[in-house]
Amino acid sequence: MNMHAPAGASLIADLRPEARNAPESGIVEVVNHGRLKPGLIPLWVGEGDLPTPEFIVRAANRSLAEGETFYTWQRGIPELREALARYHTALYGRPFAMDRFYVTGSGMQSVQIAVRLIAGVGDELIIPTPAWPNFAAAMGVAGANPVCVPMQFKDGRFTLDLEKLEAAISPRTRAFVINSPANPTGWTATRDELAAILAIARKYGIWIIADEIYARFVYDGSPRAASFHDVMEQEDRVLFVQTFSKNWAMTGWRVGWIEVPPAFGQIIENLIQYSTSGSPVFVQRAAIAALEEGEPFVAQQIARATEGRRIVAEGLKATNRVELQAPDGAFYQFFSVDGWTDSRKLAIELVDTANVGLAPGTAFGPGGETGLRFCFARKASDLHEAVARLQKALAG
Image: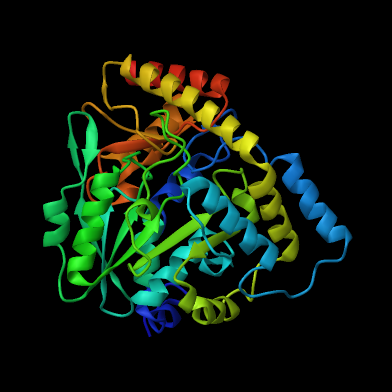
């Protein structure tokens, strides 16, 4: 017996490698370093500073008061699935049926279900990076392998090289994972780019896992970003993962949905049954209120993000030490600082010197190593102060 081995080391060695090797979040590392610092401005995670609107909270409270605290439909209550169909019909301008939508315990559970549907041990899923780290982690826990295709940063913008995307396909490839508008870069695919990605997927008979969670946050005056819904046919192999977290300030509620072909209904129900056994009814009632009454709040969120984007881009450019372009979508500014190649070290230093919390680009995979992610879904006064602190720290 090795007397110097940490307690439990032999037990850990006996665990499945998919669990044992699940990576620690590079974002959480910086959060843990700075979360207790007085006066720190936390801009490291993907949420705004507005609490969930009162009309959504009231719907949950009514449901609780009426005793809706029992097991319910594994697929989601019919009223919410119908509301999701109406929401999509209004957003995309064509009819949607409720049997395409299934309620999950978060956008993250939707990602896990999507991966489980199509990939297992040894399979590959191709993902443009920098990318939200939970994608790759969900693949790894399922035994699948993420294949990263770094995006190019050219003329101040990230672009996806479709030739490189196609070249990454192997006999083990099961899907592309496409996040647009993207976290952390703000890259937003055009309709033509989505059509081209879909054409490649059709050519090789592979799936697309589409994360269009930030579709409402675009800055060219459009009501939403281009979507695979705009270019796909009914028989195309596209799975959509979604959440209530961003549009309606519901990050702590842990509720989302997955959109799949109707024939998958029983399979989705089974996967939900054997993980969470369904989402609480009172949370689903809140989600209905978000969809049916939430458009003014979504408009407020977008207006705040639009102003936040301007404040952050202009303020950081004024340092003359950063490389950036204001993002086309989502609510993150991704930027690099002249003279710095280790964003993890820089993020920790900025916690200490500027009292501002940013996410290190190292957390987002190949292509993000030198960058920092700044979440600007926050009130203007906080953003002005954060930018002023960063200007001072970077000048030093």
